[in-house]
Structure formats: structure tokens, C-alpha cells
Amino acid sequence: MIARAEPGVHLGRRSGLGILRATGPAGIGSAIVISAATFLAIFGRLLAPHDPNLGQLAYAYVGPLGGHPLGFDGQGRDVLSRLLAGAGTSMLGPLAVVVISIAVGTLLAVSAAWRRGAYDAVVSSGLDVLFAFPGILLAILAATVFGAGLLAAVLALSVAYTPYVARVLRGAALRERAQQYVAALEVQGASAISICLRHLIPNMLPLIVAQATILFGYAMVDLAAISFLGLGVQPPNADWGVMISENQSGVVQGYPLPALVAGICIVLVVVAFNVLGERLYEQAQPERV
Amino acid sequence: MRLRFLLRRLAMLAGTLLVSSFVIFSALFLAPGNPIAVLSGGRSLPPDAVRILEARYHLNDPFLAQYWLWLKGALHGDLGISIALREDVSTLIASRIGTTAALVLYASLLILLIGIGLGLAAGLRPGLLDTSVLAVTAISAAIPSFVAAIVLILVFSVKVRWFPSLGNGQGVFGTIHHLTLPAVALAISSLAIVARVTRASVREEFRREHVQTAVSRGIPHRQVVMRHVLRNAAIPITTVSGITIASLIAVSAVVERAFSLNGLGAYLVAAATSKDFAVVQGISLVLVTAFVLVNVVVDVLYAVLDPRVDLGARAR
Image (tube, rainbow over all chains, first blue to last red; front, side, top):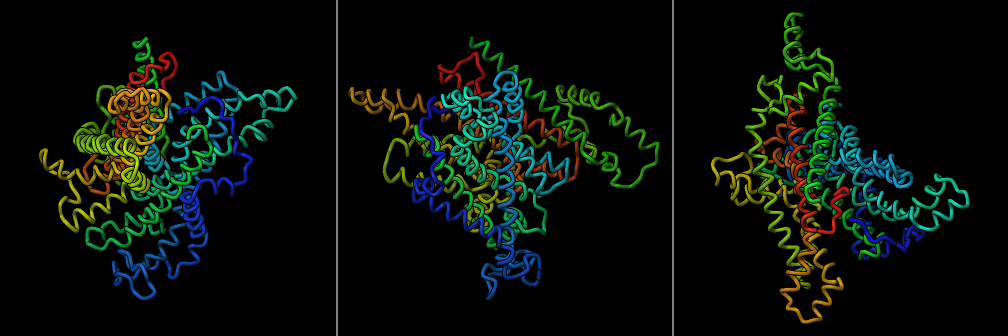
């Protein structure tokens, strides 16, 4: 959906903290959840009280005990430790997808909006073809070709998300390109690259950040789904999606805790990214609120 | 003009499908691994047998010739032979496509009925209902299908035993009974997204000047809602419903796997794991075609609903 022609207000030069404060309590709460998840992603492995891969089959699906507050999974491994160790891959994968698709999408969008003409047409129709491939399907294809693993899944999702990023940002870049300050800079002899890097992209930054935030949630769900299918992160490596598929049999046997806590972690983080992303989006396009 | 728009859209559709089929075929063609090794299970075969197999599966033809053969077959409904199962890929697909289609259709109905219903209720009635719909949908929009699946299995087939946790079921009622939990799991996050967009667009239309004018002129509320609000809100609602329903086609693989359903998606994953290339190619082609077709239908609906859409330009 294309917004009205004149964005007028730029939030790009406001401080990050100021923008966050303007997202309200829900936005700040989400930011706290995201910070906590990021902290665990970095330090979770060190905080894990037990070896996340050490299985003691005698303890399979045993409930919470002293020193094991979340009990054991189907292979007798400490659930809390696996959860903490899994935070790393569960957060790193989506981060990689977001960084790649935002970088490539911004590059394509800005260059297409700047050059227009044939280049724009080629980029746009290339992206149209990519739209025909849902992310999960592309990931399954990638797993068939390159073998199952996090890297193939991340690359496939990055490719699948790029057209969505590029379409939204191309519209924004076209509006920005039409602004008078761009013409003024061109008259003064500034090079296209310097105008784009110094002015155009910084002015689009609020929209880019909002897009990245929302995409992170989608990427997390899709990557966990691919791991759940057995084509992403490979067991015995800990990952929240892998934990759910490993412990699904426990659900049917009436011992759902390991699968449930992993599911709750995913939902919490995704809710936080969705809510914050939505608020940032409203901020980035104040005329649409 | 309408006809030209339709023809243009159909030409784009054909082009997209052609390029996608090429991408699917060439990706798996370039994949490492030898189909004959899959067939022999890793044992080495006598050279004569290898030669016969290579001839039967056209493994020594040049790349473009193989692609052309595959595409020509696909257009006639022949997607080649699963080397692992020694069966027609089309037959294998035909026996499984019903489950996936039923699942996606069931989930789509839930999304359209409940999602749009909730969104309209919340959009038209500010207050407690609205606040609770917003809060519930914010969370359920973030529930991945496989997480929904384990919670549904836990509650409805382990605790109260209303619905089975796996299998396809027999007959119409058996199928509905077996597919209810999978359809809910598949629909839940899309349903929430559709509800939120519906609510937001109803609200936005209410703020429009022409609606305010109609209200101030004393036109009955019902009539304002039907004629001015819903008619305009229908445009974004159609778009988001179409996009989310199209996305179900791929996500169904996850749900089929979680509920051990014998559908296309689950089979695609199994074929991907066992590197049964012909099956992966065939199912990918079917899924991409379905995905693109739904998107075209949405585009056309969008143009019907919104006469302002420039039919000469790209409708995307």
C-alpha cells in the first residue's frame, strides 16, 4: 500500500531513545523482551547450568527436579540448558536473514528508484518472479540442493524476503527521490552515491528499521518451522524449533513441558518484534496513523 | 480495457510460471548427488545396468533438452518417475493433493469467516470487545503453526480427546473431524492478521470525510456502514486475505508434518530429505502454480473492487 505523496516529516534525525519512548509502553515492553532475548542469545551458553547435549536416558521426560527447574526432555537432557543454549541459533538465524534481505533489498530499491528506466524494469520483473516462491518452499528446495542446515535455510529465506523489502522501500525511495533537496544537491554537483548514502537512505531509515523489526519476527517463525521440519538446524544442536520437533512425542504421551517452553520462547520473542515493529511503522509514516 | 487487463495478467502469469519452472528444474539439476546412486542405494551397479538406467531417465541428454522434456511432460500432466519409489510422480501427487487442498480450503474458510468477522466486530464496536480482540490477535498473530499444533494436540486430543492427533480420516465427516485441529493450527496466525487489518481498515474508513459527511447528513448508521465503510474497506481486506491464504499453501507442509497427515507438503519434505529429485520438482511446481494462481485471483478481485486501479499498468 502506497502512502500519500508527501511524507513531510522525517524522524531519521531523532535519537533512537526518543523514537522508542514515542512507541509507548507496549513498544518499550517489547524492547525489553528483545533485549533480554538478545542477552540470552549471546550469553545463554555460558549461563546454562548443565551440558545441553548430555543425555541421561534414565531421566527421559522426568519433570522438574532440584537443579533442573524445567525438567528433562525425551533424551534425558536438561531442558533449561537446551533452552538457553538454543537462544543463540534461534536468534542468530533470523538476524542473518534480516541483515541480508534488508541490505540487498535497500540496494536494489534505491538503485532502481535512482536509475529508473530499463534497470528499474529488469529489477522489478526479477523480483516479481521471486514473489512466486514462498519462503518455506524455497528453503525446502535449498535443503534438497545444498543439504539440510541453518546456512541453506538462512540464504533461502533471505532471497525470499528480499522482494518484499525492495517493493516497500522502492516506493519510499521514489518519493524521496522526488524531493527538492535531492534536486538541490544534484545541482550543487553531489554524486549520486553520496546523495544516496548521506541523505536518501538516512531519511528512509525509520522505515527500514521498522521493516527489519517486523521481518525478524517472520524470519524467526519460518526458520523455526524449517528446523521443525528437520531441514534447518540439525539435532543434537539445541534450537527452539528443533526442541519442539524432538519433544512432540512427549506431548502425545502427556509430557508437554519441553515442547511447550520452547514454543513459549518463540511466541514471546515474535510478539515483541511484531508489536515493536508495528509501532515503529506508525512512527515512520505518521501521515497514515 | 478489462479484457486487455486480464490478458496482460494471464501473460504475466504464464511468464512467471515458465521462469519458476526453469528455476525449480535447474536448481535440482545442479544439485550434487547422482540419481542412480539413489536408485541403487549406494551399491555400485554393472556398467550395462547404469547405461540402461541413464537412457531410461534421459540422464545423458543436454540440460536444456532434459528441461524441455520435463516441461512438455508437465504440461501433459506427466511429471516423471520417482526414482526411489519407481512410481509416477503425477500418481503420487494425485493421491495426496486432496488432503492438502482440503486442509488449505478448511483453513481459508476459518480465516475468512472468523478473521473478517472478528475484525468487523472490533472495528464497528469500540470498547471492551475491540480491546480484547486487539490483545488476543496481537498474541495469536505470533503463534507459529507448529506451536499451535502441539497446544491443540495437548488440549483437544490428549486432555479432552475430542479430536484425533494424527491421520487423515475416512469419508466427509471423518475428514472434517481429522482436519479440524490441523486447519485451526494452520489458520491461527493468518486469522489474527486478517482480523487486525480488517479492524484497522474499517476504522480508517470511518475517519474519512465522505463517511463523516454521510453521518452528519443523518443517513442511517446501517446504510453508512454498508455503502460507504464496508465497500471501501473491502479492498485492503481482500488483499490481505488473499496474501495470507496463498501463504498457507507452503505452511501446510509444517502442519501436515505435525499432525502426520498424508499430504503434498509432508511428502515434499520427505522427498527433500531422501533427495528424490523428481518428486521435489513435481510438488514444487504444483505448489508454486497454486500460489501464483491465488495471487492472480486476488489481483483480479482487487481490480474489480477498486475501479480506480489503473488497468493498463501493473496491477501489483
